[in-house]
Amino acid sequence: MDKIESIGYHISEIMKVLNLDLTDPNLRDTPRRFAKMYLEIFQGLEVKNEPDITVFPNEDGFDSMVAMTDITFYSMCAHHLLPFWGRAHVAYIPTDKIVGLSKLARMVEYYARRPQIQERMTQQIAEYLEKELSPLGAMVVVDARHLCMEMRGVEKPGTWTTTSAVRGAFQKRDAREEFLELMIRKREA
Ligand SMILES: [Zn+2]
Image (cartoon, rainbow, N blue to C red; front, side, top):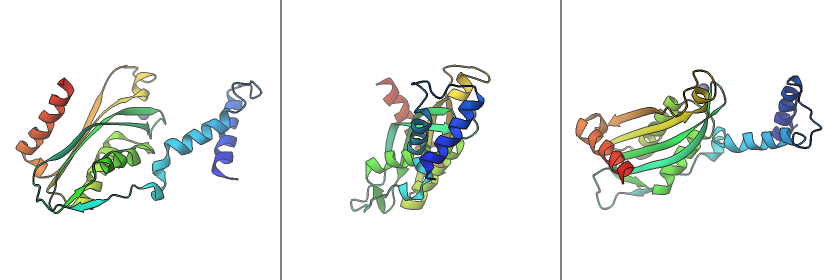
């Protein structure tokens, strides 16, 4: 049985437990749709989907912060398999390597597309930057809303959770503040 068939079978069993009528035209193909959707939103579980990060030599000796803010992402919380989504902000200070900007966004996507917890995703992105670029410093801030907090449980719609991972030079206050100020300026613009 391939993955689509297998996931489809199991979700149809859950639907039966819930007394859903699987002959209803709106539900008939739901198991298959669900299975395809799961494979799509969990693409980050396949190591082969790890983005190929093109790294360039830092020929001009650029030694300041490179930051990309407001990278939107969608993920699923590992505890409830409900969506959490928001924006990731990524910064690093290069040494001898710089990275194509689109790759920063792809990297966020890769770590988001799996059952995930926000704290871990934040760290994984920072660790990836460290591993690939050996930067002077790296910092990642993630702002997200969690449906498991909003539509169930404590039911607090509209709350945002912020996590950050700080590496190397960003442990110094000046570098950290430069990044945070830039994030705030962007938000006000
Ligand atoms: Zn949750």
